[in-house]
Length: 212
Image 1 (tube, one colour):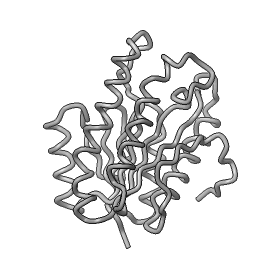
Image 2 (cartoon, helix red, strand yellow):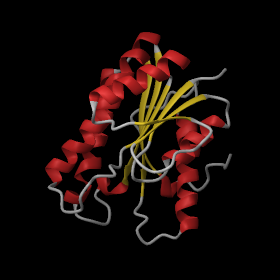
Image 3 (cartoon, helix red, strand yellow):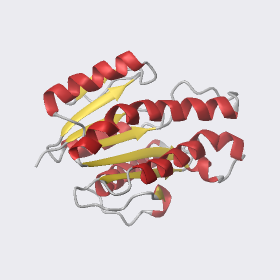
């Protein structure tokens, strides 16, 4: 049975693969993006998620055609993040972006009695490799996810986080593989029968996940 899936693009470059994976399952897929060229076969809307009016209009249009969002996948990486940005400001910006889209879609999930949310973030949030200050935005996002788990306790709404390593020095093939692994894991975590919630899963340890 087709589900309504909303994928929010970000700077990691994985959202396109995630959206395509759901489309191959014949789900109704909406793709919100701020820049670049989106996949042509999807319901695409250019949207600044931080703009409440734009976000509400985009989600409302999607809901009109496909009903309340069943699955939400948010690439939390911000295109506009400055490398020199204050860590506190960066964390606030990243969390605000995630809060905005979750705040717009979660009420519909709770009213329907079911929903699946996946956030995609960098492993810097776990303090790996670089200073914790650089990973503050993603650490803050994980904190948000765990708060949502408690808020949704007792309902069939799950919230999980997929993390990935830096790709600054990775080649195109490595980035493509990472995107495919993230997509496979997102689909796995959001199965209707899935019950896992509150997990933070580093993609680099999941080479055993089968390709689709």
